[in-house]
Amino acid sequence: MEFFNLAVNFFRDGGFFLYPLALILVVGVAISVERWIYLSRETSKNRALWDEITPLIQQGNFRQALQVAQGSDAQVATVLKYGIARIQHARRREDIEKAMEESLLEIVPRLEKRTHYLSSLANIGMLVGLLGTIIGLIAAFSAVATANPAEKANLLSAAISVAMNNTASGLFVAITLLFTHMILETKTTSLIDSLEIAVVKFLNAITERQVEAAPAAAAAPQAPPRAAPPGAPARSPA
Image 1 (cartoon, helix red, strand yellow):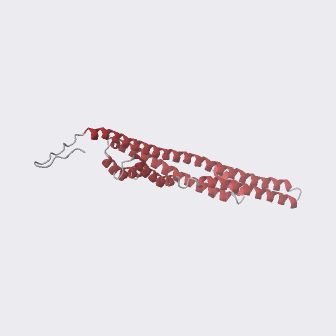
Image 2 (image 1 turned 90 degrees about the vertical axis):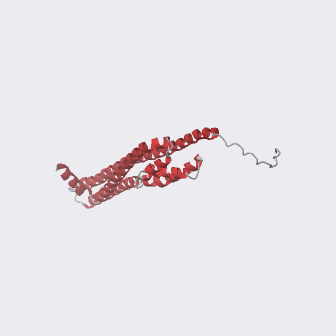
Image 3 (image 1 turned 90 degrees about the horizontal axis):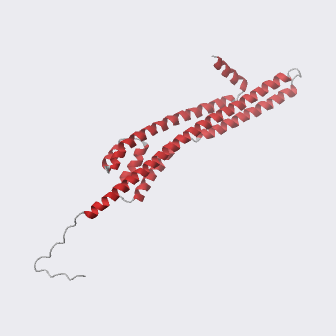
């Protein structure tokens, strides 16, 4: 209850600009919470699907791996679906890699969505707090210039209090939003790195399967040449 009364008095004595600052803080916190939940959920789904699909890829069972990926909405499932679908039409590593990179171009903007708003809101909050400080100081000196000398000290202290409240609020909003922006950027980068690692591991698994299949194909017995029918003229060597 004491904290609530303190907050009410702070807003009442801080002037008009504390209300936009409060709105900026609420919007920034809402974005931060939504992004944190989304990124945490995607990280968990990606890890679970990758653990399930890795043995299938190592075994070369790409058909079943595709079925598992199609049954999931995880981001890594989208990447793998692009890669496995490309295997059916191209065998070169470069072609498969380009297809998976195309999927990353589709996924990364969704992971980074709205996170950059936090840095902008932090800057806006700082500027709004600075504007409130300047307005408070202007009001302070204007009041002192026309006030009774006996009241000048009280008016000046009240106006400076308003100015400092705006400065403190702007700094608090900016620091809070910049800190949450840093955390979310780190979490987003980690998730994107994990997707890129999944791409590399998938391509390496395909390359290993191709290397293993090459000696087997070379060692396969070839059909002997068919004998010429009786009476047919013998072919002279080239």
